[in-house]
Amino acid sequence: MENLIANFNYVIVVILMMIGLWAMLAQKNLIKKCIGMAIFQTGIILFFISIGAKNEAKVPILSKFVAENPPAIIVNDYANPLTQILMLTAIVVGVAILGVGLALAQKIYQQYSTFDEDEILENQRK
Image (tube, rainbow, N blue to C red; front, side, top):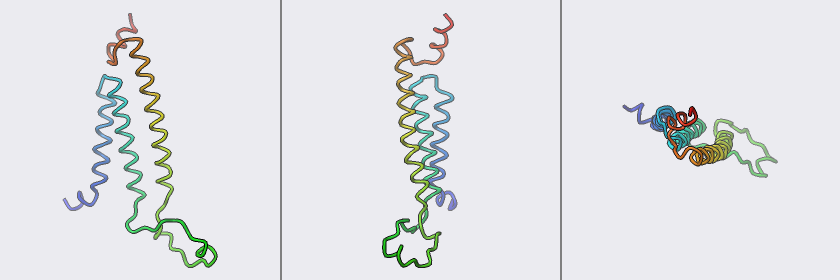
């Protein structure tokens, strides 16, 4: 139980990813599939942010004084900004993909008057 509490963020990641994966695979409604994709993406972003987090890490910005008089820099004392930058990019890409998915769902609804996947496939066969 102690290990579970220590890794609570990873438990939340697994729960979010499983909910999102279930929504994308099991639901027949296109809007619900888009929501599931967004939930899955949130789980992935939380996972990468959790990996990059360090307790009591310093900000990796060195002042002009430190740059001119370099002390012995211990790399493990500083946070790695790469995961944060990549996840910011992933959020932007995810919002764009969600927007395209919802626009496609709207176009499909205009043509078939339903968001249900089975009804759309049935209407295509006719």
